Image (tube, rainbow, N blue to C red; front, side, top):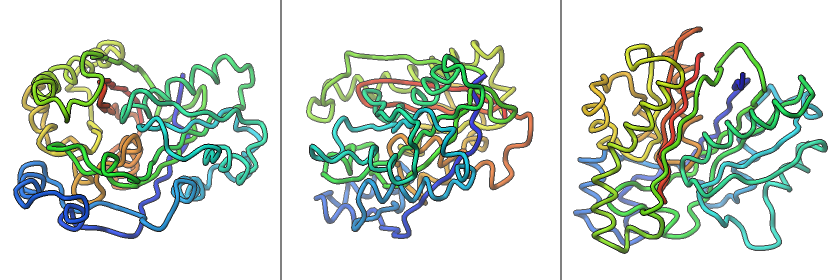
Length: 310
């Protein structure tokens, strides 16, 4: 059974208020008030002087469990929201592989599911390891991206992106953080740029909560569990308002949703799942044996949920 052996998080030291970001990318005072008062955004973690390689490198270096196990890494996956992250022929993922001596690893990017790509990467890593034939093999899943353009910094009316990064060791079998289910709901009619099509954006916003609720329900059904069995729900950090509405639709207590990082870190693309897991584990909110659910949505549109046992 796929398991998360260890998770590390890198938070860039620079905290930038959303008003400073807004001044740089041309947001109006009204837009910023909505982000702060309605969506619950406050500040975002950024590393304006660092590269994507620097960002991912810092996350991997924060993973002490990798030391001495480099030879066991069979797959290196980058869960990425944006299809293109660096100009050709620069390849930060292959540079990362060389820097850490992951000589046995096949390295590739998992994309096309936007901010839900990290759950796909974990599922794919587990399936690859199960077929590998080496019970000691591991996969290393990294996530984190640069806000290198205005489009990469902002999803209008929804969120402002940050630059946190994560690294996660995945095994084909393990006793902790075991994956019990993984469900996806895809809505290809929202492919493209809803932000440039008001009618399409209105439809997307109308369908967002019920489709996420459907994905969460499917993951729980696969795991043979109900909402009452979950100790925590770990969301992606797009904003607080959407998760409060989802909780009302689910009749699930919002106090059991890890929302603190929305205001203090920001929405870090596909890295949110592991940022919030790290918060939950270091803060003692998860006990051995607890069930929890990670949920994420990616523009395009993909809605994904994964149930795990701590």
